[in-house]
Length: 249
Image 1: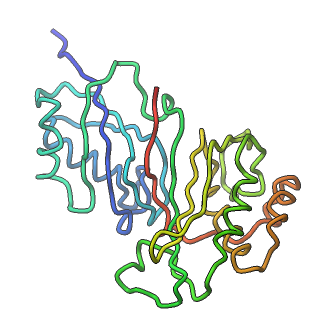
Image 2: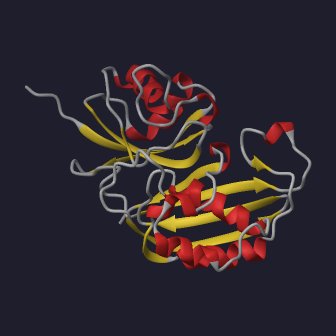
């Protein structure tokens, strides 16, 4: 008799500092590598997790979503506690849910929220070096916020995708975006239905140049229209980027 299987949805939080991104790597340690290796201990068989997003090396997550199919008998509500005992301290299973067999963490995602943090105080904090972009220049947050409103909507984001992107269609929809000061940090938030390779980091790099008055606010619209990567700013470093939430129906 075939064993009954369950499709389990997990919400994962992780510090990406020690990992070569989320996606499985043959010759490096990724978050997916660790999840599949360690979670097999509590399910009693080898597993394959499907991630909702591919975060880069050094990028963090509050709300990565994965799903996996298991024939293991562990009750779903006990998975977070059991995972705590086998996972390293920098990866946490926040929530476990039973979902329909057809649920797919990536293909069923309707939108994602990313946050990028910058410390522009001019005083580097060694305790934050892996979690924010630390700068020596004070930034004009109002100018950055005015500029980021120009990317809200459906646009061709060719100017903000890096080489190596596998997406055939560069058109994406940003539902909302904002740059704001929160204590010592500047936070740039993007809520969109999809993102190109390095798109958020390239947008932030351009916004920072506007915040430094190296570019005018109006240039953001021109960059979008010209669709050339060389017209946009340098890519922001990975450590300031967080996947905040993945939204489903």
